[in-house]
Length: 361
Image (cartoon, helix red, strand yellow):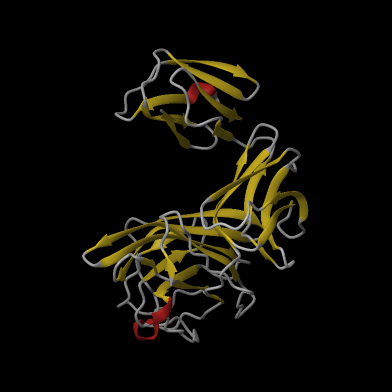
C-alpha cells in the first residue's frame, strides 16, 4: 500500500513483456492514472483513467478490461473469457468494440450476469501507425471498501478476441497487469504541435535514484533516436514539471518516448505519444495561461481565426479584436476582462470544436 499524498498521484501498471496467445493482435504498455479520490459512506471512491496499446493486425474486434484490488486478484487462467465466478471479487469490467472508432459496449459476452461499466465513461483512440492504436478509457469510478487514508493497489487485466461468441469467446491476446514500481512515477506525458516545433511536457509524482530523461523520437514507432536530454531534479516525492522543445521535428508523424535512466545505468521506457506534423495539421494552443485581462495570446495553425469565440463562465460572448503575426494571435477584449474563468472556443472546419480554459487572475 502506498500513502496517499495528493490527488495528482498516479498508479502505473506495467509489464516486462506482453503475453501473446496468438498472432492476430498484441496488447502492451498499460497505464493506470489516478484522477481523484473521495470518501463515501465509509468507502473510497477511486476515479481512474486506463490506457493501453493494441496492435490489431485485423485479428480482433472486442476487448475487455477487469480491475481488482491487488490483494483480491483472482488470477483467471484465461483459457477463454472468464465468467463471473472466475473473475472473483472484481471491482469493475469494461467492454469495448475495437473497430474504429473504438466504442463502449453495454454487455460482457462471456457471462451475461457480469454488467460492464458504461454510463459516464469516455473512450478514445490514437492511431500510432503500423496497426497500433493507443486506447484510453476515462472516468472509471471504482468503489473500494475502506477509508481513503491509503491509496489502494489496483490490478488490471486486458484481453482481446475476434469473436463475441456468447459461450466461449477465444482469446487472441492477453495483457496481465502487474505492480512494477518505476523509479520515476510519470504522469501526463503530452506533446503539443506548435508553429515550427513540437513541445513535450511531463509530470512526475515521485523520483528516487533517477539521473536523467532521454527524449527519443521516431518516424515509424519502431526505430528511435535520441533528440534531447533533461536532467532529473533530484530525489523527491513532490510533483515536478519537465519540458522539452523539439525545434526540428520530422515532417508527418512524430512518435516520442522517454528513456528514464537511473544512476546505476538501469532504465525504463515510457509509453509512446504521437503528433502529426503534416503540412495540413491543425494546431490550437494558448501561449501563456493565466492571461491578463487585456489580452490573450494563442497559436492557430491551418484553421480560420474567424471561427474563434470567447465566453465567460456564464456563457456570455465577449467582444474582441485580433492581431496576427504568422500563426500567433493576440486577442484584445473590447472591455478588460475581470478576474475569472473564460472559454476560448474554436469551431474548426478541419478539426471540429476545441475549447481552451483561460484563467484571468
